[in-house]
Image (tube, rainbow, N blue to C red):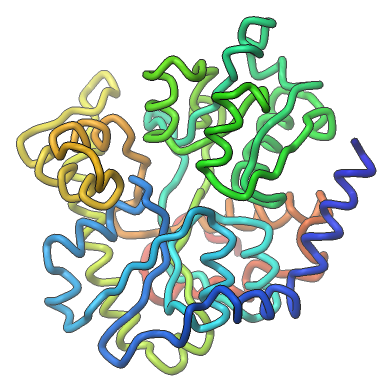
Length: 355
């Protein structure tokens, strides 16, 4: 298992620069959009709710922008497409591949996306029915079990690494199974091909409700961290900064609306909703659940909302910690400095900024 893990790390580093850039050309789908339009890569996740609300409320139009959203099925290809120029911005979770590209000067991180925060559910840790029946009931039971992930170096890889740190087991004792997509992860769990997955809440709840998996817990029950980011290329920062500033202003309005409507807690720490919550959730459901009945989609969004900072601010220190962990695992080049790729000038008031 140790040899396999080492080889996976070497493979990720090997494609960190020239290889990923070559792959980017294949995935780009052509040049980015015309002036006045920004192409944005995203997953159909509730964690991108600020983007979807800003679209539905016309905040981008008010800034004079047309937004072309391109949907992906995993995080890493979004970063690659930004590097290639196929899209102008990406919104997704941090990955080792993203850090490698950013550290080589190919990406700039400019605002926060979602965050794992106590009191908010975030990603779920699921166990297959077969593994559950065999006694897999606690985080401490992960050793000698298998975990389905999208890619080596994904956010799911990082999360199992942090659970291993917190619960005192060796991550190398967990058999990581890269499956390339979220849909493949869900299918593998349902058919007992893997013992567990860590996955977005709206997908997790559907699996549990259908009886296809058991909920072991929410990642935020154990740890907090800066899950995702809004990022772009240095080329776009230098050539289209006014458009990026317009994008961020509109995005912040969407984040504020999501926070007020879906993230308000009562005195007991439970989320509370009002009529506006249904409106905002319905806007997000249009993108996350385009094929299901709107009222049902709205309720699923309300039940699955990641924490999003209302101003798009980073926990900067946590990004530094993530980079350090990926370096320790041999998945990010040792010389990469998080300061080199975080442009904190687009959003004011970032927290936990190292001195």
